[in-house]
Amino acid sequence: MIDTLQQKRATRFVLLTVFAYAIGFGIIMPVLPELIVELEQVSLSEATWIGGLIAASYAVFQFLMGPLVGNLGDRFGRRPVFLASLAGFSVDFFLMGFAQNILWLFIGRSIAGALGAIFGPANAVMADISSAQDRAKRFGMVGAAFGIGFMVGPALGGLLGDIGTRVPFFVASALAACVFVYGLVAFPETMPASSRRSFSLRRANPVGALLSLKQVPGVLGIAAVYFIWVTSTNIYPVSWAYFAPIKFGWDSKMVGLSLTLVGISMALVQMLLLGRVVARWGERGAAIIGLSSATLSMLFYAFTNSALLTLVVCLVVGIQGMVMPSINAMMSQRTPVDSQGELQGFNGSLAALAALAAPLIYNTTLSYFTAADAAVHFPGAPFIVSSILAVIALVAITRLNTATALATE
Image (cartoon, rainbow, N blue to C red; front, side):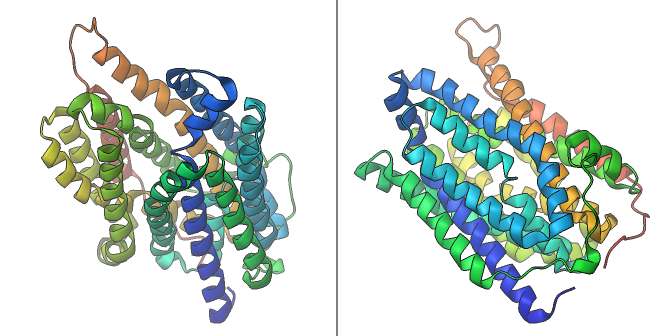
């Protein structure tokens, strides 16, 4: 493990990068539909469908390329891979800002997805610089940095969008470029040459990574829980903006406020509560608490008719923010040092697959139960589905054998 000073520098850079990425991602959200309308001369409804395809292109390339990027990190170190991912996002936003037609948007998002996103390399760095027992807390810090940045991004994007539809894209690109330059100077390599392994093309794809990680005792069972949980929690980015207006008649400002409350709650939980819970009950205990809370929250959203109570629950729903870093830590603890990048790349592929499945599951369900000719009008139906998935993940994690020895310290 690298010395304390380098650990601090690496941590600072990772958190700054995730924070800046979250701001950049949030900045473009309010104006992307307008840009699609401008480029294609279509209605907002049609733009929504096109926007879904653009998001899918990102997810597809992340699914295919995540293990490749992770394996490259295990072979050549974290620094070049992390910086390449950051450069990819700067190029992505830049291309989207200059887009002359819709193809530019697809190319930009595909580049960003192919370079492995930010979370995989970020978590690989955190795994390098932390002990096995400290890993959930470190992963929680990454999640908190994203949550804080995402609170800032959409509001800033709305303000910049008043200046021009493309301005937010250029600001996001410039922000990523500035962090990239800072990383060239300040970001140390966190993976010693002695810990690296040879590159294998057979392992650098989703199937190869699956077969490789199958050899690591205990990892695939936890990975299955990870996939089920990510699919469950994807109901929020996929369906909340449609569910809340249908259920409560909220406008975009109220939807934004509710999501901001969730973001604040999750950031506070990951910064202040997660470490204490893990120290007391371990990673599995923290995940069980988070999954139990998530199940209750989803069932509440499914059946409530109170907009006020919904906002109150948004303030406490962040307890589920303990699930992802805890599950990730459980996998990371069991994975050898020279395969941490491969693991995070594989997790990225699972997350991308969940992101592709979630709209098909939740939006189709929401559309069916809110159609004018629906036999039963029930906007909360998608949350019933997501709560069932959360229960499956909860039952599975309580039955997992956690006696497997830790692979890394």
